[in-house]
Amino acid sequence: METTLVLDKLKELQDVLAEKYRYEELIRHAPQQLTAQEELLARLKKEYIEKSADCDEVKEKVRKLKAELFEAESAKERGEKGMDDISSHREFEILDKEIKDAKDMEIRIRRDLQREEKQLAELNETLNSEEQLIKSQEEELNAGKESLASEIESYNAKIVELAERETQITTGIDEEVVFKFERIMKSERIINSKQSQGIVAVKGNVCEGCHMILPAQFANEVRSGNKIVFCPYCSRILYYQELETGEAEYFQAVDTGSLADFDNDLSDFEADDEEGGVEVMEEDVAGIEFEE
Ligand SMILES: [Zn+2]
Image (tube, rainbow, N blue to C red):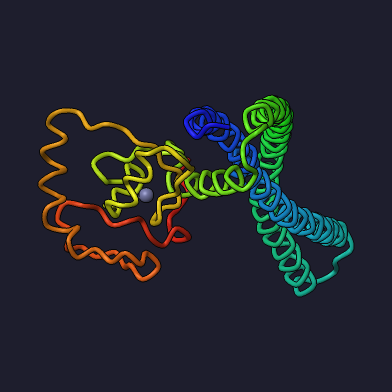
């Protein structure tokens, strides 16, 4: 296959792969859409369990207070009945005090009971409304899961479609070229999710992908179009593009200073900042966060 044809096919492949990887990313990040809802539901359930325990405690207090109230009332009644059988003032005084104490006790218990029953009613109300909230959150989450599943299904269908086009385009192209191309497209996806580029132009000896100046000899090789050439810095596949007027003057100015002392042995080359105005290739890919 002619090199120019391969380059054209790779440009087409670039768009297909960028789209395919985009869908793969969407699938990978999809479950995160529901994280907030899942966390909220877990928190609500935890709170509900805690409040239920509080409610049980108050119920137990109410039960005890009711038993105490019954005791106090009985004591009071016993005292009042006893009044019929007293035979001395001394007996009267003792019994009268017992009745008074029982009445005081009854008042105190009724007051406590009222307080605890009020709290119990409030807790029950809260529990009811929280139960409703949990139920509606669960319904919402389930609906979210369903729509997410159909979303993912549609993404997968797109991926299958794109993979078919990928096979069509790459048929007849050197496998190693395709392999390297897809690898750089994949790492591109991490550096810049918005614009994946695996094939870029060389303009005035500068790689448009990483903005590094290429050795003149190397740029000439790209221009000749005899074979597939990879950028020695960013590994992207290169094609030649003529400069437009205005651009040419800029690149000539850049050329004069820096290329004279360029080392031909590319493996020893280290990027430095001395080539004024030229960006150094992005480094530390792992440290860059993927932005959605
Ligand atoms: Zn490059």
